Amino acid sequence: MEREILNSIFLFVSIITGMGCLTGIIVTFLKRRSKPALGADASVRLDDIANRLSRLDAAIDTIAVEVERISEAQRFTAKVLAERAGNPAIPDRSRSGPMTPN
Image (spheres, helix red, strand yellow):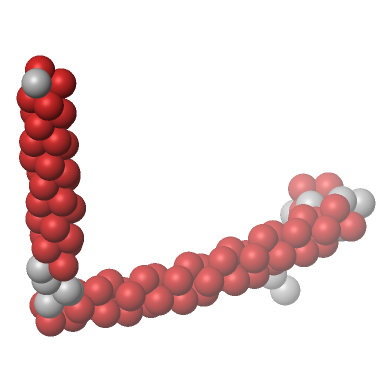
């Protein structure tokens, strides 16, 4: 008799636990399913952000090209100045005497 009561209690606890787990699974499924998708406002904002990022990307590429051009001009200027080290671009007038208009 005592064994039957224990089996009945175990069966009852098992059924209640199973029902609780099943209820939790159903509630979780319904919560995830009822979440609204991105609204029109969020979609517009994401498109705006994507457009801004593409413009920013293009601007950065343009800046990189300009910086490369500046560095190339600087290298060229340094090379020309190094080649002219023996030949000054403006002659030193102090050595040749005074310059008078004629």
